[in-house]
Image 1 (cartoon, rainbow, N blue to C red):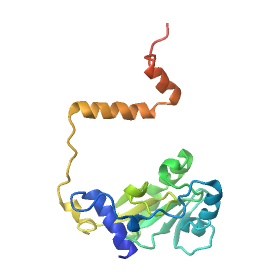
Image 2 (image 1 turned 180 degrees about the horizontal axis):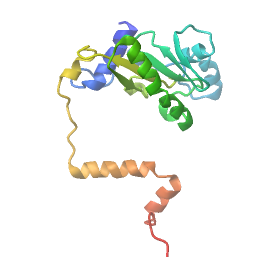
Image 3 (image 1 turned 135 degrees about the horizontal axis):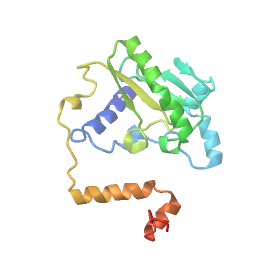
Image 4 (image 1 turned 90 degrees about the vertical axis):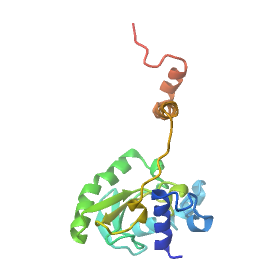
Length: 204
């Protein structure tokens, strides 16, 4: 199966889970060589990262935009005409491991770059996509943003014409989930205060 077919299957799996298995077979989504934990291994493996090689000028790419923080290139296995990637110049294996300042720099370029891509391709819309982690379809472990130009009725994903299956949760489960997420968003010291019943207490 080609890289493009593989990636399309992964994207379809997220949009239409009833038609595609949620966990692709291991050979299709094997971890990238950039995913090691050891510092020594990381230094060696970053040298093999395809995006790092492009940034260093050691691998070819069609560059659309470049500044001090990030680079935008055309995807070599595009899902649509003009499919592009915004990549940070520093190596971070996933979006959640990327510093907020770098994330801000990447996403701040989306309106400017996507507008240029839509005009050049004659598209009226685009998908903005981040695959974060193997289960979400990430295959290159150097964080990046997909800009995928779209046209009406382009049939890129057949599942868009189908009703999506909703997750049915009762009000109590939804409230519990919201509480767990809010707890994870608290700084560690505030979280401890919350456990002790002191969170949001008023001062006399």
